[in-house]
Image (cartoon, rainbow, N blue to C red; front, side):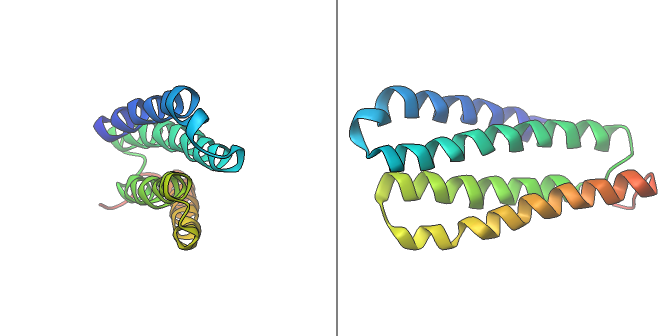
Length: 119
């Protein structure tokens, strides 16, 4: 629950940063990339809250949350860094984060189908 709430706060902060401080300093494309990171940051934060509730209820393992956490850092973090630095090579990290998001959702689905998972 803590990590989901923390990421939710960070997503709001990043969205506000994009809207108020970043807009006059970057290109429209860089702003768009940053905003995609902020949007997915919020989606991931909400997913982590959902996963925390599922773990508390005993219907999910911690693995979906671990994958979501990795997805947030790799996917959103790489988009933020790409928009702020313009270093195109950082875009190579983004699909790894997206894969982590997918694995988190799929693991959560597996846990939901099987009932209480181990670990």
